[in-house]
Image 1 (spheres, rainbow, N blue to C red):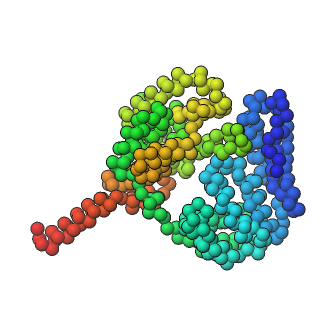
Image 2: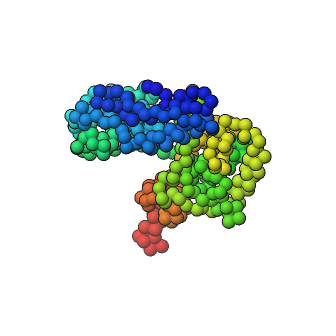
Length: 402
C-alpha cells in the first residue's frame, strides 16, 4: 500500500488520499502535489484537508458482494487517520484479527445474529497469549462493541439493509476486583511525596489530576490562556489526541479536539498550591524558549501549551503522563494506578466526604448523573463499616429505647 505522502525535494510532496476499494478489490486513491514551506508537518495538515474534501467520494462495492474483511478494510481507510490516536481505533487492531479470522470471509448479507452469538461463545474459550487464561468478559465485550460499530457503519453507508448486531446477545462485563482497587489515603500521601522529586512539569500536571480529577487529555491540552491567575480559575475547553507514529523516526502530529461532551466544558477553581506551581512552571518555560526553538515540533501549532515535552517542544503526551504515574506506583510497591484511576479516586473521595453528587458531576464534567453515581458505589471498606455501625447503633437505640 503506497505511503500517503512522498517527498519530491525542495519541500514538494505528493499527497495521496485512499478512498477505499472498487468492486474488484482494487485500491482507489486520489493524489495531488503541493509545495509545503513548513515541510512534512504541513503536508500532513493538507492530507487531513484532502480527506475532508474527498470524504463523500468513497468507492463502494455492491452490498451483496462485500465481505466483512473488505468492510473492515474500508472502515479503517476512512476512520483510522481521521480519528488518529483515538483509543477506540488503537485498540481495534488486535480485536480485528480475531474477527477477520472467524468471520472475515463471510458476505455481509449472509451474516446473522446467530453467527455473531456463536463467535462470542467461541471467543470466551480462547486462551490469551499474554495471560495464558481465557479471555476476560471485558475483552469479549470489546469485540462485540467493535462488531456493532462495523455493522452500524455498513448500514449507514448502504452496504446492508438489516443490522444483525442489533439482536446480538451482549455479554455482561465482570470487572476484575484487583483492577478496581484504588489508592488508600496513605498510599496517595506516599505517591505525592515521591512526585515532589519529579520535574516541575510533572509536579504541576499531577497536582491538577489529584486536585480536580481532570482527564489526562484535558490536562495535556491546557494552554496559558486557560488559566486565570488573578481569579485562581482554570478553564477546560479542549482535549488532546496523541497520534501514534506512522513510520519509524517520525513524530506524528498532535491533534486538539473538543472536550468529551458539552458538560466537560467547565471552569474550576484552583488552590494556592497549584497556582504557585503553575506560576513557577510558566517562568521556567519562558526561560527555556530558546531551547524549545531548537526542537523538531516547536511552532507546529499556534498554541502556548502549559505542559511542554523537553523532547519535542510541544504538548506532553497523555500516554506518557499515565506511564510515568504507573512507573512510580510500581517503584513504590503501592496499588497500581494511572491518571484515569486518580480521576476515579477523586470521585470516590468526593463520595466518602458526602459531597453532593451534582457538584461532583460538574467538577468531573459528566454529561449524566448516572455516570457520577457509579463512582459513589466505590467507597472504602472502612466507610462501609462506619455506615453499618451507625445503622446498627440506630436500630439498637430503637429496640432498647436508649
